[in-house]
Length: 167
Image (cartoon, rainbow, N blue to C red; front, side, top):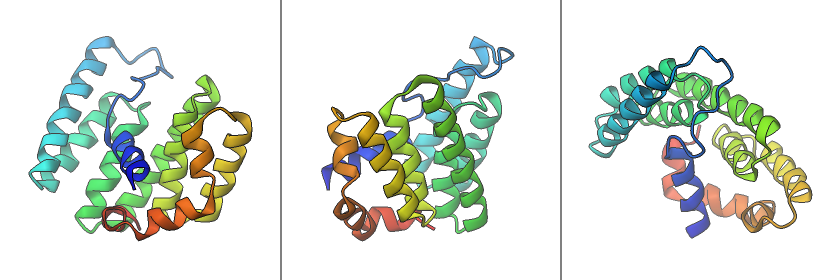
């Protein structure tokens, strides 16, 4: 249960590893603005002002389009608003960005986030396949190893917090 919370919190924290530039055209000022806007969006989310939060996450994603956390958080907010298709599009965009970031830097946390998004989109089999592959590549990573266990997926699916943001 605590591991699930860690995964969900990590997904919701913008700037887990900071914005990694794909394009040198994103300035430091834009990255700082995006972080500030995302912080405001997190606050709006805690107040359950999902309309405001979605607008702010969209703004953050436009300012820093290479940051998967903004897209993932936008997806969660859109899901809370009942916009399943919008949430799916944001989850897909975030999963692609995590995949790209993992390919570039090789951080196991990016695999965990990508797998979490796959589960949110209903692709548990794809998530388990990714986690098993990642666990083999990073045998010393306990979180990745534990998440590769199919019983973890079942625990995640039964969690009521997860059902609020899953498609």
